[in-house]
Image (tube, rainbow, N blue to C red; front, side, top):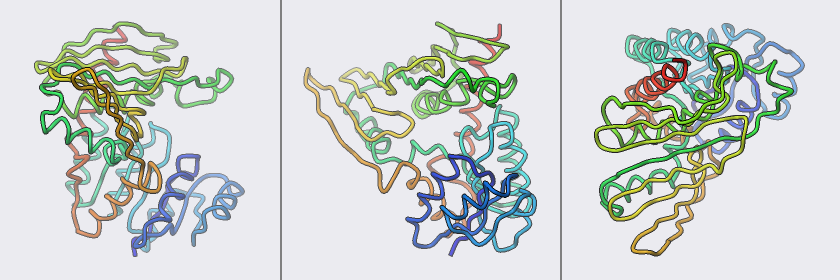
Length: 317
């Protein structure tokens, strides 16, 4: 039985705990956070043996096999590395870290300590994402020409001052939702792109909205990310023979396939929920004694961060 610890106890941690209950060979053993009352409420809703008011205490518990890092973005690298050094397998919430250098340090530590690490890029584990990849590999829509991925929603302005999402240096829409968008480009386009910023809304060097085009040698990508407006979440992949539109690119469950003037809709619901696929994959890797995922590899996480860094650098010019 894999015994999990969750570092951090916010809403994302609750969703993880809900999904973990579907695993037959894993369970929630401990949680850590700063507020005792909040921890007790979490434990009541999601039963576990231990509550720790210190993340370090949780990592020092020898009974814990794996940890889920559910902290703000700028804390991912620190606590992932500390967990890996304690020989705890790490599933880190996206984005893996706030820049490429941090992600590189995290994967270097995982390799050095021979310990499993994976970024929780849940979209890659959903049936609709997998089926989209199969359609592309089979040549159904021909050679890919363009990929456009967009996710934007309205984040309440009254929370701007208190949220890490708007904190200079660590916040921004690109790390929040843009990491999902860039993931689609990373999967199909190679090499270093030329980058053009089509539109942006900036406050204190933090992007509240960004629309960027990335020109790769084998195609053109566009990402739109924001928390100051609402856009229909989708990924549009245009090929020489047709196109695919995937609903909700961060948790896809429906594909629209356009060929020869007709549309085919392919419904592919999640197994249990949108978190379960990545959890089951990770538990399988751990049981098999593997230290790296073949679905969300170290190289994938590093390149996602690299491309986001490049877009952010262009934004700040």
